[in-house]
Image 1 (cartoon, rainbow, N blue to C red):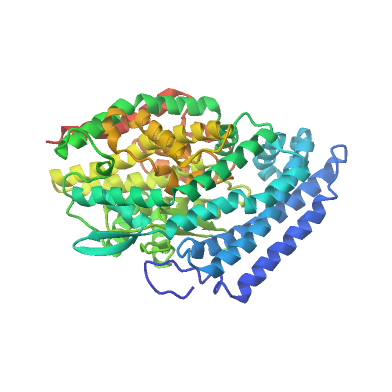
Image 2: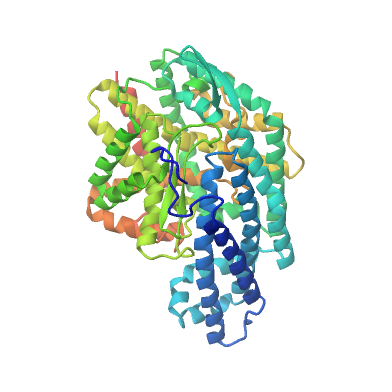
Length: 599
């Protein structure tokens, strides 16, 4: 990639280009390595064979899987860097399709290894004691053995992996293409422009209500125009998941999500219960905000509206400087990492048509780097978003620096948000500290509370939506109207009197890509876990100061090697207790009280 735009990412140190011989060779190497592992898996020793034979076979596969996954994830991220920034790029789409075929083989082999390790699960401790590599991967081995209980036969698992390419994976691609290529005429500042959907959605935070309202109306109309293909896509994804979860002996679609998140139902119920009981305080915030806007209640287009006046807008360079300064106050290691990311052009920040909305961070383990996508618009919110995604990158960096393998650093989403929330909190606290007057403090609190409300109130609504969709999809396909009905009911149950129920968002299900991920159910609640866990850790940091940082970096390096409950206990946190979640929510409650008290 030779693009020199400072707001576009650079991956030229990974491969020279999509059509390069190096990328073609990497794809061929992945095919060959996958074939070699396939042969090895056919002749694995059995449960009654000598421990030394089992240990040798397991170690050989772990070493091969680590090498293969490191290269595969790097190739995938490289191709994704084109697909996510230019959905019109036919060459990138073609390469992604080729990689998807390799991905099928990798999934099949992973499943077969999981099945084999399950067959020798009673001897894992014995063979781990014979080999340092196995001892270092003991958590991975035991987790794999436990999850082997939920496998279909090898033939059916192979078939499921192959069919996902033209089934759930294809529906997911359709949603991404349809939403990223949507172009909506919109009058802004006296000029009619064709905006892509993420740019239109960003106008929800415009200071002028007429702009927000028209953007909301234009968005609803645009999403209504694509609702039928997206309803078909969502039915396809959720129907396939229900079928596979049932055939694998899962209790429900939530069962695998909990295992993937490495938490139990008791933990989820404790967190959700605390979140539910916090709705009245968030509704007080919504009502206070409506009053500031001179209204009796908020319409949906007011939920993201700014309050006060933060006169600070940021150029991309100013955003970098602000982040680097305040990251340095927490840890010079964090600041050094962020500087390397900025100077190395690891971030694609420009808004443009064909680029997907939102933000994410992806790892490149073969070169021990990360890349970040965002849609920067100069607001403090987007500065926080960059900080958030840099937190994910720093999380990757801690694992790389600790020498963790790919299998050792497979982090659940619940813990994957730890560093990102910490970094976001650092920036919010810094902005509040730098605020010069009442209006700036109010504006920064507003930005923070908008995000908190999204992660607690709105994500709870998404959890309710997805749970209901899974249940109703067991009986029949759902119409677009039914998806809208479920979404509206979920928003009413969570936002309550805080938002005018005449102006909710029935089409939220169309543009959130998480609902269309066939391999990851209930993408939503881990964000709530991450926010509240991160707030709890920040409170500990405030108590311990710099002495906290070393333990924190150690935690980030090891999030692939324990359950969430086990790792949280390092800091004396009991995530199965409602008290922890209530204490974190109380921190947000204090922000709300401060917001309400500002005259």
